[in-house]
Length: 137
Figure 1 (cartoon, helix red, strand yellow):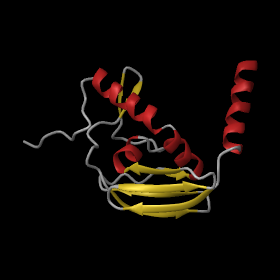
Figure 2: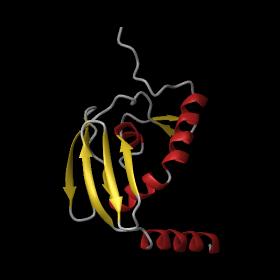
Figure 3: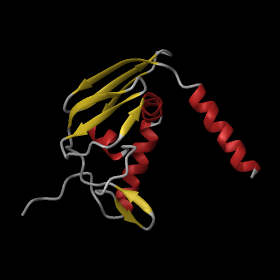
């Protein structure tokens, strides 16, 4: 119980300390650029955003309990719709559109992008999957 409580406090502190978004730019179809009031700016690729979409999606494969999205190297972003004053819904060209990306989530994806992408590639390799879409026959 103590461990769960400490984890919740750490999570709350992380959200409370997240810098404020100062700029959001969609560079369709390939990327999103976000900038925060602490000076950090991140260019996040469409593929990266698609595989880390916060939505549950039917195109996710569950392999050994791990959720894996493969074949999204060339996915594009068609549009971004504001959701309140806290985030956007991205519409991808594979028609995925149910994830709402909050500003805090963009900050997490930006600040941890190298580790997250490296882990994603390792997971694909472990399961014999690829970032490339399957070849059409």
